[in-house]
Image: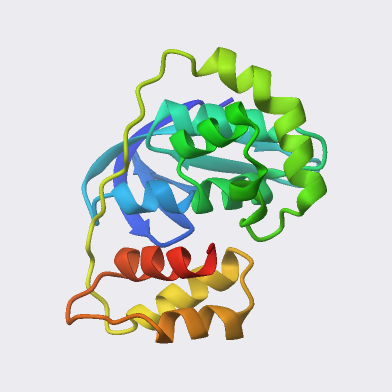
Length: 199
């Protein structure tokens, strides 16, 4: 069971990265919150959740132990698989998710694509006490934004939003409504679009 990996970033994208550890490339799925904080290159240490299925072994990477713990807690809820858990963490920062679950605020959860009223209520029902106990002494920290430049920033952001479950037409409308300056990063574009989409 792989719990942590330290290595060089060989490839970095919005939803996954390849980490070179001693010449072996590990593919790790990541939430947007981790992507925002990753350097474009260099060495990083990631907390890893190993998910074993009958036909596959998947690795999920997180920059903080807090994110990994939230991911594991989400997986403990019936009907929540790795894809949905990653989607939740990509739409709601870990410390904000903890607060929403602990306080029973289902509105924030309802704004996440793929989560309906019943799923939101089930998440709160099953995780409220667990979150209160697990993160009682945690100090919230916000991921920092990195700013890579790209000639296809809008299309990259659109692809990420579609992968997160938003309809392409709705995502494109949100992106088109943004007032973007030259050099605005993909991460900043995504954050701006998500602020519009979750209203």
